[in-house]
Amino acid sequence: MKKLHYRFYRILRKQGFRAHHCHKIGRRAREVVKAVKKNNGDKPVLRKLTARLDQWDYKLDVENKTLRIAILNNEWVKLKLQWYSYLDRYLDEPWRLKEVLISYRNNEIWTYFIFEKHVELQTPKTIMGIDISFYNISYTIIDLKGKLITIATMSFNGLKRALTHRIVSEKMQKKYSRKWKYVRGISEAIRKHGRRAKNILIDSCHYIS
Image 1 (tube, helix red, strand yellow):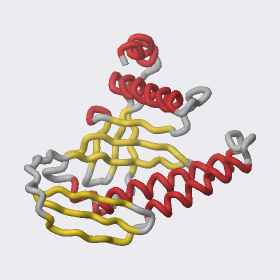
Image 2 (cartoon, rainbow, N blue to C red):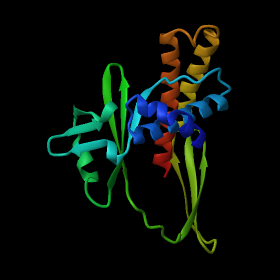
Image 3 (cartoon, rainbow, N blue to C red):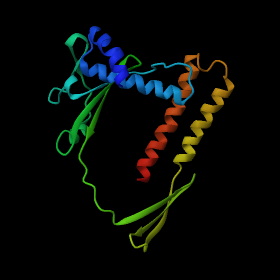
């Protein structure tokens, strides 16, 4: 990050970016490059137009359901939000609004609020072991002395559903091996199945926990 900061900070500032923007741009650039190297890609490509904003770069008006965000040359723009009632529960203690993620896709602007709260760690009283298969989840709970408390099995098909999307994605890549990267419709379909598989696995982790 120090090398990125040294090489590009003044350039970005001359282009009108705020100091916090420069820091976020550097972090995002490093993430993209690391991802490309990890996947043995050819060159870094910014596929999503997104921006993470700290508390200094946005102003949320809950009463009027608007969001003001800082842009180039210390100017501000106002967004009218499509508000969802479940967000109200996170606007009071113990939750705190930390960051705002702005994303532009399909000619629409999407806003994501990132909340956080302090969690007091407690001393564990039991230990749970989990065995996940394609059709069910088996779990065993014991106390700290090794005494068995319970054993149970619950139905589960998250891995099977995720694998189905993964297979579809790989078949499309194999079928269009020479052009899938360059044909927008094919590449978007492959990424769509990849996202679905990823979201299923994330939801499955929440379900299991």
